Structures are given as structure tokens and as C-alpha cells.
Image (cartoon, helix red, strand yellow):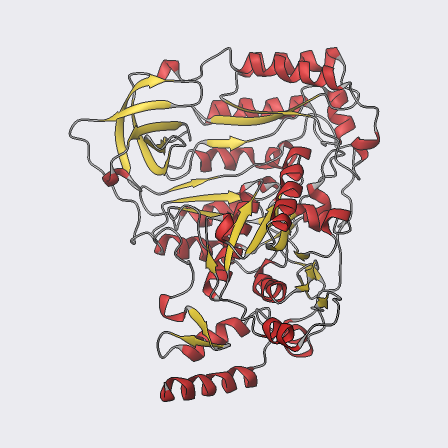
Length: 565
């Protein structure tokens, strides 16, 4: 273990979000944890009552909108997959949808503003609404959330229940924590159905929450304290992903460096098991890690980042180079700790990309504090730098501190942005020959996007035979955030996927024959796997509030209907 350059000043805080978690048996049979609250209306006519009763959940179109980090994106993919497997149609056209599932981010004010505006827009268009993500989890009693259905960040495996009730006109809120034998779990099961936004990329959340108590952070209120998934479950999820044609895996969490501290293991132990499963040519990308915990594993992390199937890339937020500001943020490290991480990895992993975050205008930040941050950027010339103007989030200690004037925050943000754009990190790479993995399409749709060993973005010609392939390119141009490459002459195109990738919009983790459609108010599968389809909705954590007896009865009714039609 490498010692920290400064001692931690803050003890870990307890889990800030707790709730009694009913067992699956209680959910499924006693129905204790879901209480639909029917809104009061004026007395309806008989015709109106019949119309309400005729609503068949599972026949509607759902639009899923996600803001925020890759963890949130993974949650959104899981929710879309479960809804599609249950019969709902996932649409990319918000105006065509019957229900909007809005998956929020609480990191900054603008993200929550977009979320709030989307709720208003949905209501103006008379859409049903289900809310998810960190905003409603952290503050479910906000005025603009009143009367709306909410699915908590640890309850995404029950999204079908919430959507079913919402389309019937009820308001449902599930905000509890996942627990087993009194111990908080990482979240919903990893083997749930999923619709990957990009069929070539699997996002795996390795843990939820963190061990920090940063004074500016609202996410802690939603995600709580650290809770890690067991190594064997994560390895199995990676294995399944590769069997579905994935060629790139992203590991994500609020702090990957803290992984396993709650279950007696650590991040390097997980990574060494995962690399055993990565096919040749496929790649693994590590998510964000805070300095305190990665300091303990620098030697092993350097070895892993040098592995040919792991990107030599690490996102380590510094937030400020002033120890005074870091103390007020309760970041539990000093600038020297951050430099130790960066210097060690740059020495041991030649060419590594270090990405970092900086907050401009944190309460109490002086001109001298800000100049220290500017000097850090001048020294390291980070190729990837996320610059954030400070926004006080309601309910956080930083919101109660004396604020830096708005015009000063804007000026500092502008100065740091100008410094960042004053250098080009990739100019010296023009003329290099690189192996790159092609996984995405550029925003302007003119190129395919690939990444080299250092997770640097390389734009390549948009040829269908390159998608999902490892190819060799010659770099002929460099910009601030990218390089451009021509396919090298006589270079071979290598296919890392061990299976054909799923089609865009196809449900992962669920055999096609088990997908369920809903007809005449009962579930009827497209083949003889009707029973299995029903049981999928019943197993695990009570995905549907139906008993096995009701399911079997419905199957018999469906068979009779099919026979006489």
C-alpha cells in the first residue's frame, strides 16, 4: 500500500438513504411494497369507467430519456430492456410515445432544469410520466414531482410494475434500498433484460454509492454509501455480453477505485478476473476513480493498464489544485496525492491518458487558489479536461457556504477553458500507425469513431466493414479532441466479437422466443414458450404482482381463445 501524502481529514459518513426492503416473497404474494394511489376524480359515467378498465398495460409506446453519467445510462438501458421484454414498444420519437420515462441526473443545476422542463412538456402533451434517476431519489418531495410515479435507483428491476400502474392512471413510488440479510446490495440484478444504446458497448456498474462526503455532491443523497457487486456476478455479466457480440466494456460507478472495500475485495482483484474473459481485440475501459483509493493499488493498476486488452486510460478528478479548497470540499486528499497518482502512472504506463475534472468558483476559492489550479493544467496539459462552473445544489453543505460572485465564477471558467484550448495534445501523433477499435458513429454522421490503446478518439472512413472491428490506420490529421486516420495499406481487419452483435433496439439477456406480447388482456407468447414468458415476469424480485396460480389460469384462458379463434 502506498502512503498518502496527506492524512484524511474526514471520517466516512453513514448511508444517507435507508429503508426497509421487503423480500421478493412479500412483494409477490403479500403485495406490501407497492400501493397504487388512484387520483380522485369526479363521478364518472358508466362509459368512462369502461374506458378506464379497458387499458391493457404493455401495449403502449414508451420514450426513455436519460441524462448524466454512464451509470445512469446503464440504468436506462436496463429499464428499456425490461419494458420491451414485457411487451411495451420503445420508441425514439417522443411525440409518438404514450408514456415518457425520464431518467434524471442531479450533479448540476442545468441537468435538473432540463429534467424539470421535460416533465412540464410531457404534461402539456398529456403524456403519462414515470421519473427515475438521482433527482427524485434524492428529493422525492419536490413540488414539481408531486403526484408523479417514481422508480428509485435501486428499484429499476421493478420498472414494469411502475409503468403498468402509471398507464392505468395510478401514482406509484418505489424508493427503497436492496438489502440481503441486512446488508445493502449494489442494486438490481445484472442479468436483467437490457437494450444497449450501442450494441457493441456494454456498460457494467460494478458498485453504487461511494465512501466520500463531498460538500458539493448531491449524488450521494441518491446513491448512498458504497455497495459493491460480487466479482463472480460481474464476470458473468461480462461473459454474457461478449456472447452477445459486444466488443467493448465500460466499467462504471460513482467511484471505481473504492470497489470491493465493503465486501472484502478490491478493484485489481476484479480486473484480473475480467481480463481473463476479454476476447482478443476487444477492450475494457475503466471508469472514474477518486485519488484516495487508487493510491493503494498503483502498482497493480499500472500492470492492468498495460494489458493489451485494457485501455491505458484513467479518469481521476482533481477538482482543484488548492489544498485549502480541497479541504472545504472534503475530498480527503491533497494535490500532492493527485500528482503522485498521475506521475506514477505516466512513468509506468507510457502514453497513458489521464482525464480529470475541475470545479471553478467553489465557495471560498481565492484568486491564489484558482491560480494553483491553472498552474496544474499548464504543467500536465491534460488531453481530456472536464471544466465545471460551480453550482450550489440544494441540501448540500456547499450551498450554505459563502458563494463566489457569479461574474467571478464565469470569468474563471472562461480563463481555464482558454488555457485548455491553447494546446493541441495530438499534433505529435500525425504520421503514426495505430491499431484502433471502431465502435461508434460521429455526431455529424460523416465518420466512424474508433479509439486507440490510449482511448484517444480517431475518426475513420465510414465503411460498414469497419464497424465493430479492430483496424490499423495511419494518422494524417489531428484536432483538439480527435485524430483522423486512413486505413493502412494491406492492413488486416480483425473481428474481436465472438458472436454476431445484436441489432439496434434488440433486447439483451432474453432469448427471442421468450418475448411476450399482450392480447385480450392476457399474455400470449408467439410460440409454445408462453409459460416461460409468464414465469420470467414472476421470478426474481417480483417483476409482476401476479401469483403463479393467476399466471397459469391466464395461460389456460389464452389457449382457449386461440383454439376458438
